[in-house]
Amino acid sequence: MSERTKTCRSCGDEFAVNPQQMERLLASPAFAAELRVSEEQYMARLEACQSCSKFHGGTTCMLCGCLVPVVAHLKSKNCPYPGTDRWAVLAEHSH
Image (cartoon, rainbow, N blue to C red; front, side):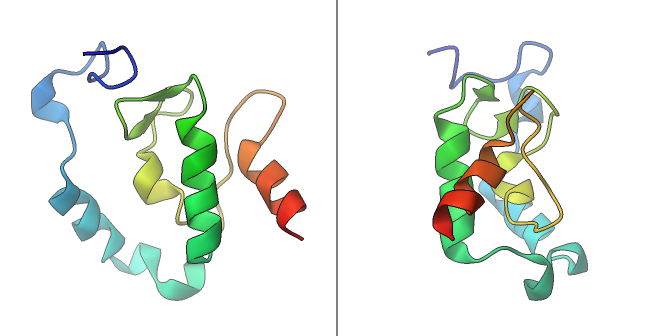
């Protein structure tokens, strides 16, 4: 298993988040439609993360520890990459 697809060094497999858990999070009021970016922006954010060396295990940002497939939906969130908000760069290029 490659470094980018195995679970976090400090977490065992039992802490891996499954798709059902992510769906449950996304169904909560904290992820209401008016709080979310468009589907196009969401997919662009995921793409930016997938090309980042700090994206780990297919779900986790190693800079902030967030679940990227969940947090990338929120308008209020930004990429924590030092010196460059990779999501803001995407937004600038889409206008």
